[in-house]
Length: 214
Image 1 (cartoon, rainbow, N blue to C red):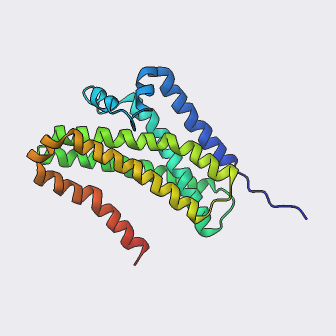
Image 2 (tube, rainbow, N blue to C red):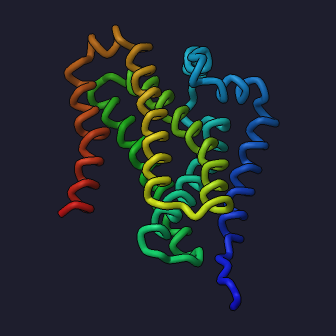
Image 3 (cartoon, rainbow, N blue to C red):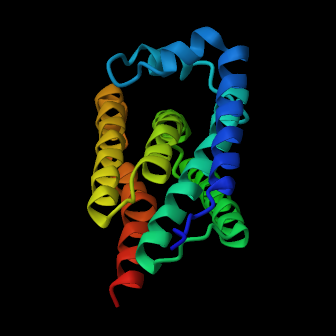
């Protein structure tokens, strides 16, 4: 009896593209990339490069492409687990890629607008830089994680929960680091910052929870 083999060519292509963008980033910014990869144990990267932050940063833009591809791949792994849909569907994955990119970009632009309206541009810009940095770091970590889930094991919900918790912990480390770095600035704008967190950081998760748990 022939064994059914799931084609993972699409995943392979997405991961190779992600690795290419990571490689280009390392080639163009070798020192900054090495500092970036050590952010969990060393916050010097955040302190140094937040000063040189630009609205369109090539380093972050290159890693952002990998982030979108990596998250889209991971989302399809979850989708495949929940639906028992084995064959990668290029249309679904493409929708994930476009949707994730649009949501993240719109959210960042809206956050900058809120920062401008509340006149806390400096605080929001620094906070966004640190948040984007940790998200891009998660994007890099997702490449080996996705490869393991796709090519080494048949992932279960337990595996997915472990990965999600791991990624949330890294994201939490980023938030805590950001708060520690800007304690004085946050305290002086505490009301607006809490309003910002409730509006753009907490409410989206509540909405998602309501959607999936009616």
